[in-house]
Image (cartoon, rainbow, N blue to C red; front, side, top):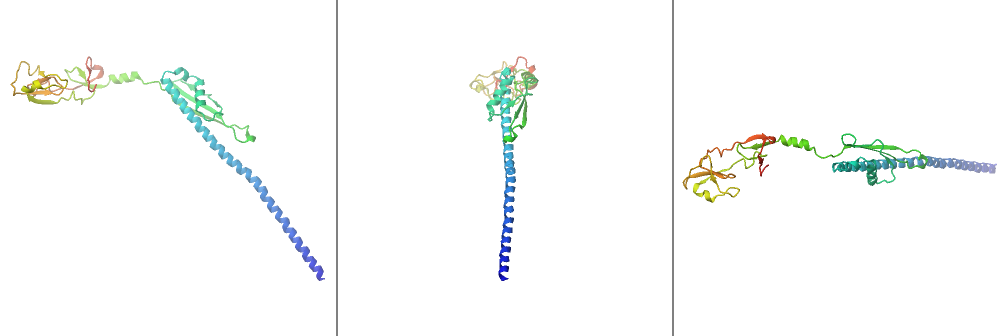
Length: 267
């Protein structure tokens, strides 16, 4: 009887061990199945993020190439090379030279060059392939556009009109016109000295001072008599209140200067 009980205990223990063994096998298998499902999804997500980064990089390269192309085309139009800046071949060659990704296929459908108001409208379409062989039939298409006006030089007519309307400054008896109201040739500096020293003084041009035709004509002052001179004049004056010393400045338009020549200092 005791022997039979002992055998029954061993049988139950063996069954328990087998049962626990059978339950351990499905647990390990479930982990393997989950890993086989999650890993591809994780790899796909990583590759997708990498692909999006590649798309952004490609967009930046295309925009940079377009900006350089339009800028150079605009400058060449200003230099007189308008004919080549109207050619589609010109823009294709420029883009190909500046694109780092030489395998990129681009089209310029929808672009227009110097057709209206000297404007350059560059439209570049391109496609990128998805880096997964099973999705090769999917090729996303992108489009970039730059619109700019070509440089055609300065509007010289408007500049000439502006010049004609410019204000200049003259004196009633002067033979020149001045652009600066504070020109030293307009603002006279009056100095007093003795007539006896006048022969030793020279004006700004290196010439001698002559008698003023208004206040000193026919008059020979004494050696100790005061006379007045100006820094840029060529006459001496026996009266400080002489009208030739008091300069009247007038404002006129440049178109009204007549035969007056520009001032050598400010004109």
